[in-house]
Length: 395
Image 1 (cartoon, rainbow, N blue to C red):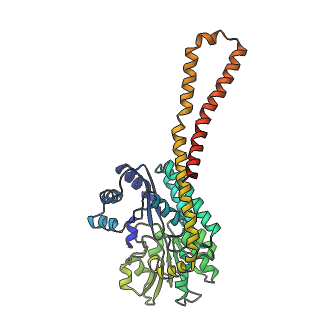
Image 2 (tube, rainbow, N blue to C red):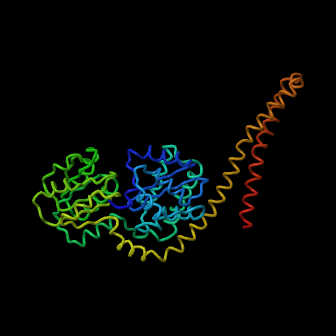
Image 3 (cartoon, rainbow, N blue to C red):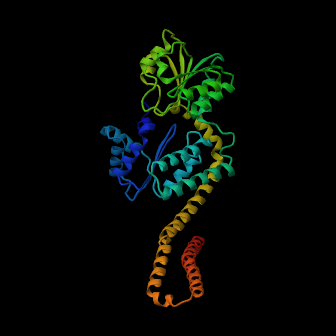
């Protein structure tokens, strides 16, 4: 299993794991993002993110971890705080800090991760504003620079590797998993005239949907170990926490076939048990060995980086202003309540005088008070915002 796979959380465990993590460290807000080559934790916390904090964090993240696992995580963690954290988030969503620079898929992954964590009650006002701004920045980068011109993806990088192996058009493909990555890969292979597909997925209905698109066959994942029709290439990408293709399953799949096989494993953690590589002739194409092609992609887009960085730095300053304004809004949120209390108190203090007023006079007085109440709420807010805007101009 790739080391990064240690940080992957199985879909069924996300709620309990993240809620426990948030509570145990008194984290105000938490967002968890897991992609094919990275895991990100976005925190809102008053705690200092030092080594003792990280030790507690990773211990709570997975209580089964040994000291060596925690030490590995601490030594390999990149920690960003304040402006640097925001800059990093903008870079990630804009695919500047990605395996494939210019790949737009990451913006969807950020949005989906936020929606999931928000649904679980893990995020709050700050991360809501941060993610909203992040998506705006990414769109701005994609629109006003050429960073995404002629984009490539992890799928296309994997296909380049596959094409270099001179695979025959009648090659037999086993596709394990029918999520976004494998669906994209399947369509890519079909476009390049491959036609022999068998799809396995935990949910048969989803396997059938992809198989129908590819004119292939579909089976539930539970039947993988019983498949005896042979294969040349495995394409696998599931969200499983453990290896889906175990040595026993692989042995059953290959049978007496001694020919070299190709496995495209784009899952994190890897779906292919690493022990298989020691016992069988396998040409593995995985996320970690796509780095070479990714570097070429980065060099081709390097000249766009200055334009991207300018957009990002401008938006960092805008975000600071948004947060200042939001703080004022939150501070002023009590004003309507207080004004209403003053009005109710005034009604009690002047109850005798009000009783002597005729209906028309009471109506006029109510209109005057309502008008003043509205102005007492809006005027301080406008004045505070004007001060913030003027302050920003002078900096």
